[in-house]
Amino acid sequence: MGTAKKAMFGGLRRWWGILTFLLLIAAWKDSTVGPAVVLALSVVTLLWCAFQAPVACGAPVRGRSDGCRNNAYGLMLGCRQVRQHTFANLRLLFVRRQVREFCKDLFSDGVHVVVTLAGIGSFLSGLVAFVPGIAR
Image (cartoon, rainbow, N blue to C red; front, side, top):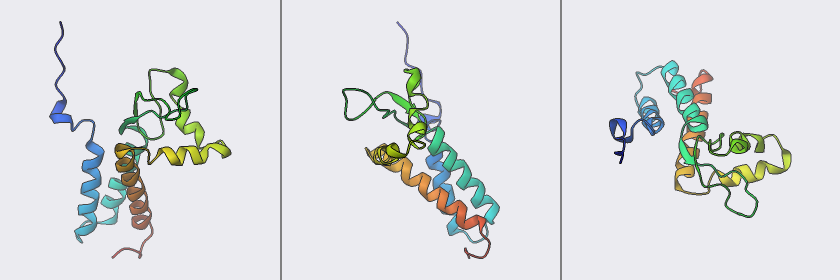
C-alpha cells in the first residue's frame, strides 16, 4: 500500500501563477517598480494561465454536453489521458465556428473564471507596460 505524496510547499507548486499575478498587482501599486518588471510578471502570468494552470480539460466529447472532465494543464491544452484531447482546446481557436465554444468554456466554472481573469489582466497589463507613456 502506497502513501500519498505530499504537495511541495502546500500546493504552491501548482498555483504559483496566482502568486505572480498578485505580485503583478503589487508592482502596479508601487511606483518604484519599472515597466520591465511589470512586463516580465505579465508574460510569466499569461504563460501560466495558458499552459500550466490546473483546470478541467473541457474538450468536446460525443454524448456529453459539458465535455471531458479529466484534469488538464492550462486553458489552451487538454488532458493527457486521451491523446486526441492534448491540443483540442487550442484547435478550437483556429476553427471559425468553434471559437464561440472555446470562449464559453473559459467561464464554465470557478477555477476557469479565476485563471481566465488572471490571464486577461496580465495580458492587458503587459500591453499597458509595453507602450511607453500610458502608465504613470
